[in-house]
Length: 104
Image (cartoon, rainbow, N blue to C red):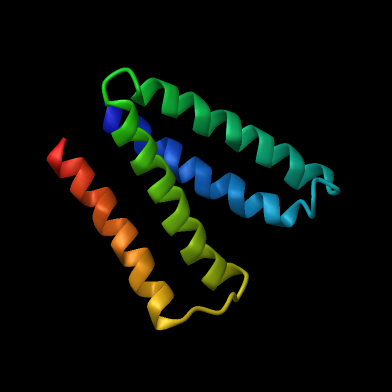
C-alpha cells in the first residue's frame, strides 16, 4: 500500500505544480485553491508512504515522479520547448525512480 500512497503523492505533486502555473502567482482564486488542495493531498500521501518506505527512497521517488511528470505536462499542456538532451535527462530521472522501486 505504501507504494500506492507514494504514487498518489507524486501524481498530486504533478497536479499542484501545473495548477500553480495557472494561478499566476496565486493571483487567481480557483487555481490557487486547487494548488493548495493538491499540495495537502501530496504531503498527506507522502506521510502515509513514509510509514513503510525509507525516507531517502520515498523522497527521491516522490520528487522524481513530480519532476518528470511536470516536465512532460509542461511540454504538452504549456507547449514548452524541449531538447533531446533534456529528454535524456528526464529519462534518467525516470529510470532512477524505477530502479529505486525495484531495488527497495
